[in-house]
Image (cartoon, helix red, strand yellow):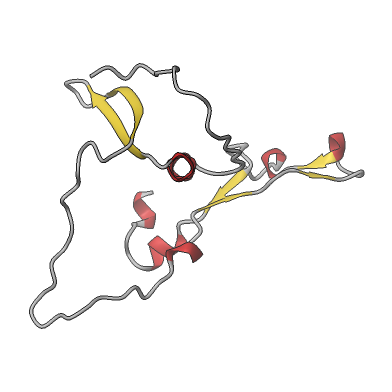
Length: 137
């Protein structure tokens, strides 16, 4: 397959995205340009990723026939937890402050922040429901 970009099409829109993750950005692009995204990842013989690409197309290139079937006497299913309320990564933007060093406050500069990044991870939901083992992480 050739994953080379085709720059012959005219521009039809501009998308501006701030403080988001890759998957949300891809979803925003798909909605804006009314296309499907196919994430293509190839691996070598030992399982290392050798190539990553996102292929945008006007239709599904590889239909996913996965799903679920209702069990015996099961008439419907419903969601009991709204996943929008589960936060696993919280981005904390820098703020200006006249009393702070260099004129801004940032969690990236905090001594307790070993990664030095401007975001926090919280997997407590997954720990509480046994979906992740705290000792293993």
